[in-house]
Length: 86
Image (cartoon, rainbow, N blue to C red; front, side, top):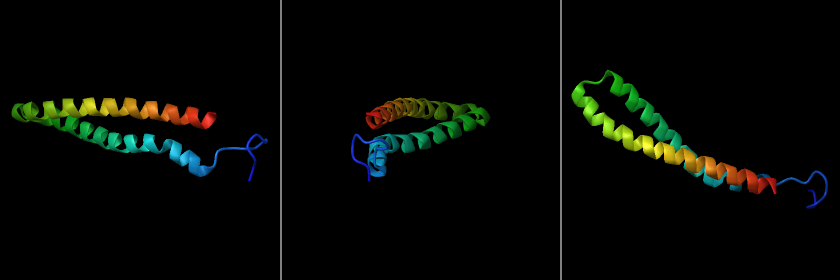
């Protein structure tokens, strides 16, 4: 085990995992929402006009949730990288 300040010292694996935990907590549900948005978009292309009227509001709301989740995940990933670089 290296001492802080010596050459070859790096963050412990547990510290790395904990630094990226908030990113993963946001990223995983966001990825799932992204798959749902893609599925709704595919259904919209082949739907009847009535089905399109029902799909569009759901798609729009989930698309917004997806974009907010992506932004939050990117911000948390950047924070984790900066934390581990110090």
